[in-house]
Length: 103
Image (tube, rainbow, N blue to C red; front, side, top):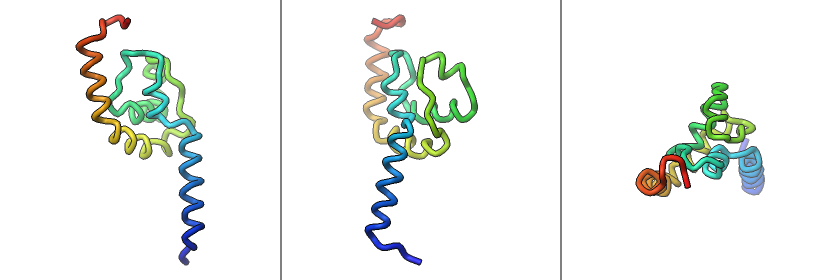
């Protein structure tokens, strides 16, 4: 049974809105308070830590728990892949320019 095109668009829009409002791991980890937090695939790392119950990782970098880590993981993987060049640049800059204790 095929859905009409407008119904498919509504389902995609609703799913995208739910995913964005649920607390995307990528945005939660890139906007974190610690400058020394890992940035490369950080959303997937945060989702994985939340799914496995690794409180030490989340508390170490003072990050917020994602609401639905398993559902968010594929979306975070896609967004982390898009942001990978920026994350590599930022990580190299942080490694070379930022003192170990931060600014």
